[in-house]
Image (cartoon, rainbow, N blue to C red):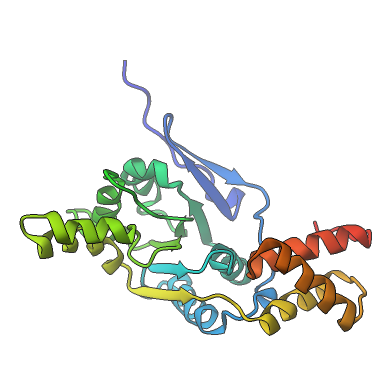
Length: 265
């Protein structure tokens, strides 16, 4: 016996959902893990561009799929969630649906549940990338810009990745050097990223931006610390990590807040 048809959930029950296949279902998320948009430092251009695109979409106007790519830990996924959180108060019909990379083959079935309903959906795929012999990207290509049905008008895709073309560089170079028709092989690999209308690049932060991030968290959560002490401790923390990013700034602040007895959630 075939299972009964999957029914769409009550989209008014939550602002965000997670897609789970086998069995197919959209699970509501009671509380989204995100930071305030104003606490994201050093990503002004990407913030303004993504906000404008998302606002158009929330108003029912044309909008592009967006690929947020670049340095790890610089707020790519945080920006997507923060933009949605900022707009959701004025546009309660704007929802987020998170899809895991390994579930991309079922993405067409997810879209069937979203198609034709009055709500508008940001389909969010975090840390999207593909390796050797990984054919999952073909499922996504048809959704973005292809297939008979195409992408529903009430769905836009936002994805984050550390890779601009979503594929390892050595994978692209190997195709270029070993394929019978190198140019066609490379086009096949990079054509997925071409289907995102917006490419928003994220780059490593400098020390001043790193310190400004931490100061912003301190002010927002009420942690009292002098600039000199913050600077000395934050620089020492970054040195032990061997890197500097928004994620490292938050990790230092988490430790700092804990030592000051301040809750962050």
